Image (tube, rainbow, N blue to C red; front, side, top):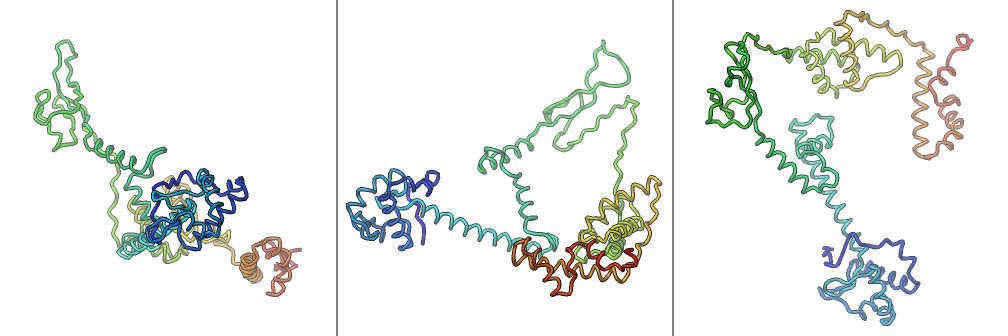
Length: 400
């Protein structure tokens, strides 16, 4: 059904269905009869073939008496539960609103699928990482548009404001300092010339005898042949040139020592490449990953993302430069057989508990049924906690 929104429809002025309770019973009954007739016809307005139905025809469709319908309609139209379009046909604003929402949801689903298809094409082309989601593409598009509109600002106003700001930024007048300028006789005749501040300099008009071309040379370096001020040198540390082979070798060592999945190779390459270009030796980087992995193993933890090693590498390198001891942590003590059995049973119990809770969605019920459920799967009836399982499987001699 193609929806044609009536000209008298106001989406912001639709009464809530809860207010129907304040109407008399006769008006409520006629309203529900009209709604049922429209729903049965799978339409929102009483018309056929482009012609509006009169009150008698509407009463026939709604199974109501004509005199009752004509007596009730003015009040229903006044309260906006039933309205007439530009042709005089009765329609339900609530059904029009519902149809509009359906079309909006359908359009949103189509747009979502279009974005997903576009993202998959660009991901296959190598523009996005294999583990990235469509949110990455959406965020990049929003950033290009300048972010969300400001408070109280419509999308159209936000677009016009961004275009205006972009033009103002391109046409911003240059403010720069140019050495030279006239020195009066009463001023100090020292070897340092004063600086003249120029704003909006013309490209054809020289200032103090110095021609200035602001379009060709954006950066104007003040110079004075009489000045004894030493030239400034850049203090920024240039990035080192690191070969792709060294980065790949370091990534392979980090993935192996850090016990990371192969899916983290792209992130590991980015992080390791940045640290190597910052001057951190590959052996130091790998040692930092190794020590942090061992610390996590002592607590029974494992890193699943390369990002977990970013801060430890920075701290390790800072300690290394400061001369702080970076002695590797001692090797973790191998677990005994009873610990392996306890942790294996604990993992099994966690899985069974999760499945039971997913089915019942009642924590108290699962807790009451757990002893029988644990017995059924050859598990101890203790609480599903790591320490409880370790205490259950610990030999009595050690417990004493």
